Amino acid sequence: MNDKKRVYLDWAAGWSARSEVIDQFAKSASSFGNASSYHQVGLERQKEIEDAREKIAAYLQTRPKNIIFTSGGTESNNLALQGIYKKATEYDPNKKAIITTPIEHPSIIETAESLAGKNLLFAKVDKNGLLDLNFFEKLLSQNQTSAALVSVQYVNNEIGTLQNIDRIAALCKKQKIAFHTDAVQAHNFKTPIDFSKFDNAFISISAHKIGGVSGAGALAVPDFSIIAPTIFGGGHEKGLRSGSLNCAAISAFGSAAEIIERDKEFEERSLAFAKKIVGAIQTDKELPHIQLNGLPVGDKNRVNYILNLQIDSSKSVDELAYIFDSNSVAISFGSACSAKVLGPSSVLLAIGKSDARAKHGLRVSFGYKTDISDIDAFLKLLKLV
Ligand code: PMP
Image (cartoon, rainbow, N blue to C red; front, side, top):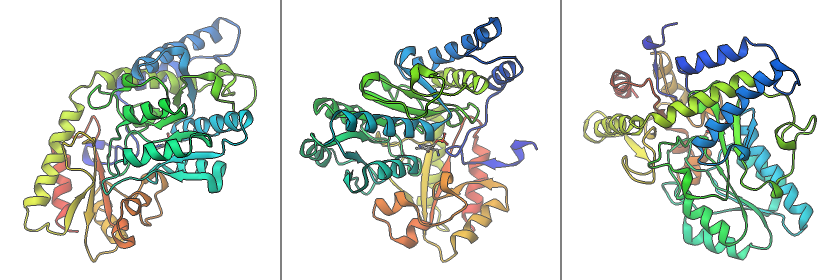
């Protein structure tokens, strides 16, 4: 199907791969071999993996030897939390606590809950989802001896809040607590997102959120002495993550990271789209029941490629979703990752919305193919909600 006939404004759920990335994927997928084999063909696959490792390391401003490939963001988050927790509690049984925020992705919250149980501690976020740094600093010092790790996301997947990760990382460093950030929704364009400002973070990223193909992810590991493996087998990926690597998806991931890093105008284009949408809801007399959730567009603590609109309508969320879906405009209510269940968003509840309002948060998100005609088509339908 020709995608230009459809309006796709759900890039935070998954990007389409660019043609260069697909070429790289096809080249690798049509080749023989397993990157672990000791023959010429295996070595060729290994070279593809190592090229991708270099590109991902450059993207994350770290060294190739610090990159562990996984199957995606969920696995990277699980490896970080489970692996660090396991090592910390083996070393010191008092280290039973995990500190995180209430607006994390389920792959963090569910994993942290299963590990720490009643020792799971939530740092405070404000009405825009921004971490309260004073409260956080106190929480760290009060739990310094019991905290196995801290995990705070870089960019929120529903409202686009961008945390002060460099300051958060520095506070964890000062208290000597392991720090992980879920950076799946943070695209590295240097500004406002810059991975070079801290060196102690375990960082999770996912291929299909930056223009790669689903089935690959990475975890940046700044210190191998404080993380244990969680998947056992042939000892691949420095013994931390066994299993034959998804060579085609990983080499495509490397190309995607290289391309997105060069796309300096993406944030600017997103800002223009976001301004157009927010301008419409602020000025159009037909849209008084729609407001922006989270920080204002252009604020330094938000990305502009994810917007969440509060729709105060008597229509049910299913009716609202139908308006867009039946007109081939892809947007999402709640988090697409746990979608198909249009319940209240845990992120909107955590920033203080009522149950009813937390169901009526509409997310639009932009990617490299988004153009102004997509925004116009969306705004036309917004008048029907
Ligand atoms: N973290 C965040 C913030 C996400 O948005 C997502 C995907 N929606 C994930 C983790 C999980 O990534 P993946 O889909 O690659 O498992």
